[in-house]
Length: 144
Ligand SMILES: CC(C)(COP(=O)(O)OP(=O)(O)OC[C@H]1O[C@@H](n2cnc3c(N)ncnc32)[C@H](O)[C@@H]1OP(=O)(O)O)[C@@H](O)C(=O)NCCC(=O)NCCS
Image (cartoon, rainbow, N blue to C red; front, side, top):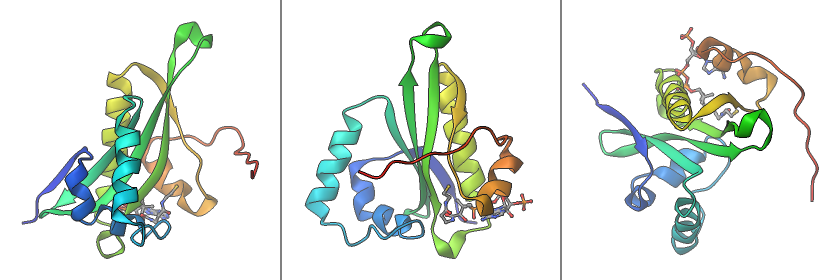
């Protein structure tokens, strides 16, 4: 049976299919490896920007990002923001996405977040409602 391990990203994951797994969301595997390493180092320099990966049999088959926002309102509370939830095409529908999001939610709670929010397309809403998310507010965007 294949073993699934969900954990924080490491630099060596760039050689284990991390960028290729992102392709299910938007093409990333064409990113120059030196640039990818620089991006990851920049991300890792903040403890409030965390990427979790799902590793199966030594290959990265999914990932999700969690940003932790410190507020002044809500008594200085913290809010988790989930971004870029993705599972490789060949292994979708096997519960990996749900396990990664639940992992990120537990981590957000352990870091003191009182809520975690995300934006998604209508078609993916059932995936998140099954985990316990409720539709709330409207996503807005400004293109620079
Ligand atoms: C959306 C995605 C992350 C789900 O991951 P996954 O591992 O395939 O999903 P899971 O197997 O954990 O699914 C858990 C449940 O959600 C449901 N579900 C999964 N994806 C769904 C979708 N796109 N629409 C509706 N329901 C979905 C599953 O049927 C399953 O339901 P069940 O427990 O009743 O069987 C994955 O399909 C993916 O990477 N899609 C492309 C990228 C994307 O759209 N990401 C979301 C960005 S907001």
